Length: 57
Image (tube, rainbow, N blue to C red):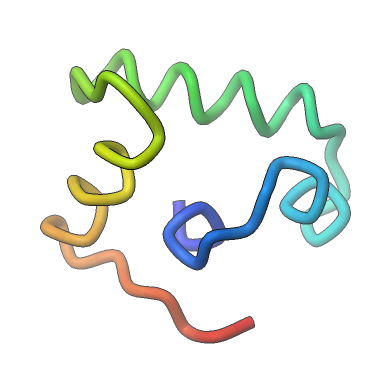
């Protein structure tokens, strides 16, 4: 979530944590379903409200 909050795209997140971009997308989509977010922007807003902050990769 932190990497999504930082604004990284799926390719960059995948390279950073050594998983495929498709796996990143799957995890993001499942997180959106769990919290009821309708898009990635809303997922980021909810993450920030929960205290997840960008650290500036």
